[in-house]
Length: 137
Image 1 (cartoon, rainbow, N blue to C red):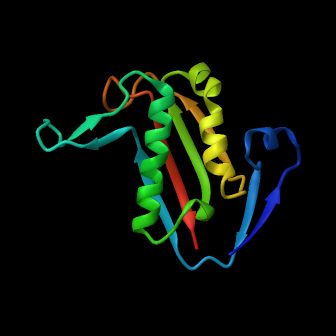
Image 2: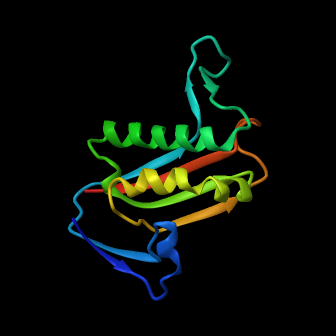
Image 3: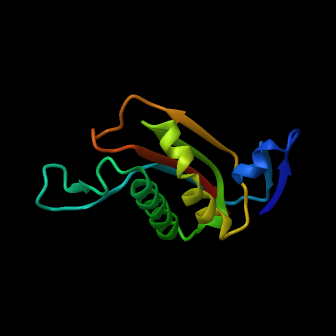
């Protein structure tokens, strides 16, 4: 897989993102469902429990860890991420904790294009962050 950054402007670089990325030579693509801060809990109604209820930093860490888990099962890792979409109920809180994402993606040295969207709520009321990813090899 060959990646070429596409940046008509440099402002996104401070956020560890490229405005676009030309990717060539893919043979596999993974579309990752929205990952949130949950863990299995067989005793709960839906079989999962919310981690770090109403705590954005912990939820960012947990959601990104769940992205890692999906990537691993697909035989991929963060270096395979092609784009990300973040959904949050608290844009200001997300940006105040952006260092969580920056450190996570910085470990692999890529700057995938991304979007950050503010939403009223997520699937469970205590959730504040959801992350969708697309990856490829």
